[in-house]
Length: 280
Image (cartoon, rainbow, N blue to C red; front, top):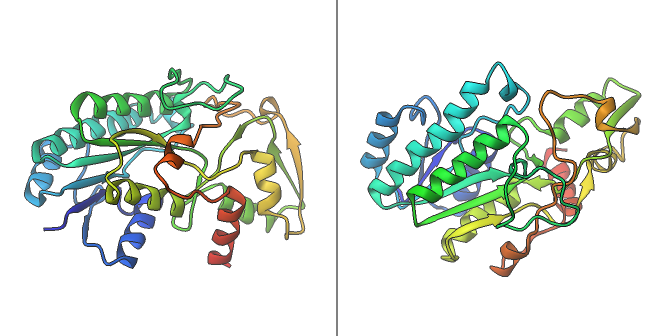
């Protein structure tokens, strides 16, 4: 039996993590909703008890932030809270370490400095509320866990902001992007490497924050993504681009705790350049 188990194995992060483990010759079992529906407590427990993993990388999540505000509100909670509790219960039953992925959306974005791990959570949208409740489920159930908060995720294997900008640039002469929401982009490659690093280096259990270094607005991010494209990118305010779910205006999370483990974090500009080379 493999030491590692991945939930959400066909998602953006789960796929990146599988590719990383494959490249290192590390065996694992990979599950999606078809083979282990995390919202089914009995199925989750039976699969994990049968496989007896030492580490569970919990990548499965509901991430449709706007849909979580209304038509998918219940599903958001069912997956991100109930599902996480089911995985945590199973991890406890087999003595596995759990790695849970959370979000900057647990913060309200009113802090003008950097959020540290023990700052008070104050989620302002349904997705953030559910992910924070998932954090609490992990903390209240397990001693051996890593909670990794991240933000603005992009990568090769899923839908994300970088792909959206590149696609829109093919059919538009001008794009407008919000310039009053500031955060840290995160390449899935960096995030997956950090998740494995925590395990392999037996880092202290607890909550960490991991994105790429440096920060930017969505507008600034878009400008760099499209710097070689024939398209004008213009800034707008959040009020000019209304969305169902509240987005934190300033959600820069401190990376000092992650850096203190010895893990090297590239800047988002470096990460983006490597990613664009990958997909070119």
